[in-house]
Length: 232
Length: 43
Image (cartoon, rainbow over all chains, first blue to last red; front, side):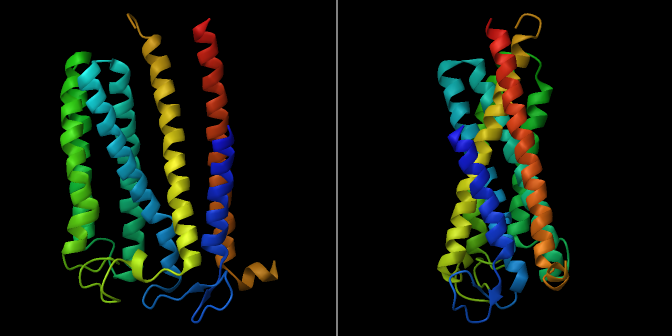
């Protein structure tokens, strides 16, 4: 209960600060955000788009943790949790792709141009899309749980490479890529003012909390569903 | 109103806030409903 109220306040504050704090070429007051050349007002996307992608990473890793637990304990509840986490991760991965594409249209001139960052998230969507195909292809519960647990672990191993490593070692246009025209490294380390950092990390925390809340709702609903199925 | 017309970003902020608050209330109520169902199922 307390956590939910904290989440409500935190994300509301992130939205108010993320949109409401004015940009200034030379910030003097604490609430002024620096103008990042080439990004300007579009820089505000970092408070929402990056946490969306972060949420999907947390979700995919959660899916992996419960997949490992299922393989060790063979409890079908763990399979429910693993697939619920993967489902949320997939949804937020799509949202990250869409919000990124809208931003790209106005920053790079086209919705999609196979930048390393775009390519890697696309491959990630394919990988997790295959996870749901696999699940829907197997009718026997235990078999489905075992196969998809193994797949979820393998899929999660690729996540850090596609989200954190590949887009940083390849030349690309996405802020933080190697050869980023604005600087030498990831935007979050080099370009954010302390105020931006506070908003950004608050947003990361809020999105993580949002994930665990949605995850618990999804799991509880699935458990009730399983209980009311014939033979369940 | 005039302030909003001059500072258009705040309009976007109000829209996003409305969406977030709507979602938040929805999730909160869904949570309560699930809790009731769980209690009924436990009996």
